Structure formats: C-alpha cells, structure tokens
Image (cartoon, helix red, strand yellow):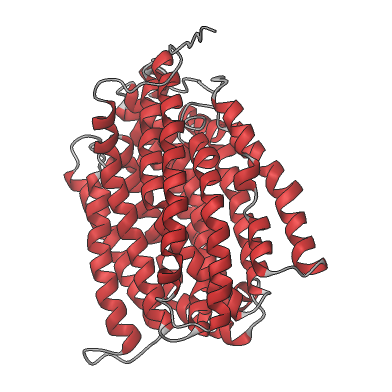
Length: 464
C-alpha cells in the first residue's frame, strides 16, 4: 500500500518568524515574570503570618481581580485594533484609541475606588463570611484601593507601547516595581528599619508605593521619551467619533467577555470563601502557582496575537492561516510542558507556605487538577486569544465563554458545593472545567479561518 501524505497544509515557520516572535515574547515573558514575583513576594511574606493573613490578602485582591478582568477587556480591544493599525502603519489612529481606552479604564477604576472607600466591609463580605479574614482583608484594602486608577492607567499606557512593538519599557518598569515592592514588603510587613510591623496592611502599603513608581515610569516614558508613537499631552484631547464607534463595535464583545470572567472569578471567590480558611489558603497557593505557569504562556501568546493583528492589518491572509496553525502547535507544546512541570514542583511549592497539613493536602489535590486543566487553557483560551480575537472576530469568544460559564460552570459548581457537598478539589475542577470543555470548539473555530477580518479604516476616515 502506498501512503500518500500531503504536506502542503502542515505549518512551517517563515524566515525570521522565530526571531520576530522572540523579540516580542522575551520582554513580555520577563515582564510577566516580574509581575508574578511581585505578587509572589507579597504572598510568601504574608504567608509566614498564618492562614488568616493569606486568606485576607487573597480576598482583598478579589476586588483588584474584578477590575483587572474589565481592564483586560478594554486593553484587549485597544491592542487588537491598534495592532492592525500598526500593521497599516497608521499611528494617528493608535493615539486616539489609546485616549479612548484610558478614558474608559480610568472611569471604571474611579467608580470601583469610590465603592470600596464607602463600603469596604460589605464588599469583602461578598467573598467570605469569616470575620477574621474580613478584618485582614480590610487592613490590606485600605491601602490597595488607592492603586486602582494608577494600575489601569499604567497598563493602558504600556499596552499602547506594546501595540507598536515597544515591549521592553514594560519589562523595565516591572523590574523596578518588583525591587521596590519586595524591599518595602520586608520593611512594612515585618517592621524593619524602624518601621512598625504592619502585617497584611504592610503588604498593601508596599503595593501602593510600587504602583506609584510604576505609573510614574510609564507616564514619563510615554509622554516625554517615546519616539515611535510620540504620544504627547495635546493628544489626550484628540478623539474621533468613528474610532469610538469601532472601539465599542469590536471592543464591546471583548469587554463583555472579560466582565463575564470577572463575574465568574467573583463567583469562584465566593465559593472558595464559603469553604473555610484552609481551602481559601490552598486556592491562594494555587493562584500563585497558576500565575507562575502563565508567565511564559501569556508572553508567547501575547506576542503571537500582535503578529496576527499585524498580518491581518497588512492584508496577508495566507500568512495569517499558516501563522495560526503554527501558533496552535507552539501553545500545545507549552501546555504539555507546563503540565509536567507543575506536577514536578507542586509539593516543594506548597511547602514554601506556613500552613497546616490539611491545607497542604487540599493544595496538592488542587494543583494536580490544575496541571491537566492547564493544557486546555493553552490550546483553547490562549489559542483563540492569539488568533480569533486579534484576527478580527471579537464576538465569538464572548458568546462561547458566556454559554459555558452561565449554562454549565456556575450551575454545576452550585450543585457540587451547596447540594452535593463534594470535596474542595472536585468543586475547584468543576469551576475550571470549561478550560477543557471548550477545546473542540476552539479547534474547529480556529481552523475554519472565518475569523480573519481587517478592522482598519483608511487614514482619511479615521482622521474625521
């Protein structure tokens, strides 16, 4: 029997592809690594204070996570449009998109800040009924609530730089922020160099100061030093009704999608908080391991997404298809490697925390489950995030996520937790099960290539 193997549709890397990918991905990976280490330093130092402190910081950060989900949606909408405009070399439209994203993000951050200032107890009570954990969470949030506007502004400014392939400034900013945060954590949490020992509140104060430094660097670079986008103060007052319309037309599904994930995360936080401080501490440990696992993943997928947007904006349809096939293989490799690595390091990682043996056992079960779910995260969530979204189909992922979250994940988790009272690791797995269930949908969607849409306008229309 003769085997006739057609190789023409197998993905292949074009000349210079991996060099371009690495030039974009390495600074983003390093930035993600530093961002992870900032939170990890908080967690490890607070972890020496016991499970109540760990749980308090975890609950306090749920507000930040809700904001972050929304801002990522705004961020993604801007980056997708801006990357395509960068492919068309239209920087004037990118500036206007940056103003739009800043306006929306800062407005949302201000609103959330007011809510947390007015009713901190009620907000923390949404995530847990443990009074001791709520007290620790409020001590932390008293300082962190000042960071919301600084955080979103820094992220949008640095995303503007990333859209024009200025990725190193984000890395440098994160390195400096890490240094400030770790040093101040040590001083304020444990009361060194004459400062009082503030515990969880010290972690919040250190985070506030590091966010101020982070914003200052991003602000100075974007407004005074960058020569590629050349964004200056007068640009803050230049807007465009056509681009506002495009932003909401194509960005609304992305923003809504991240709001769905924000609701999902808030629900998960409430479910976890209802299972006691041991489970909350175990999930906090998982959260840090998850962030560590995503360091390389989000950097590589982010770089792949930028390249997708540039190719679509430049009208290179066949290259987009080949790029999408190659991206799926790269992400599958990251998923399998991550699964193996998580299983190898999970026990040493858990032992970094001063927690009870009950918490250790729960954390081990949760990390085992997470290691296999991570493959699904790579091959569906990030695969669609670096192809379908930047390729121009911003509605599909939102519809897909909404269906799985509200019709399966939340109802199934309610049954497992409150009706059947199943083990914490089973409830956790159900909460994250959509990462695997959406895999077949993602595969067929990506390889249909019906998501390739050029969203850019000509310079005359975008300048109106």
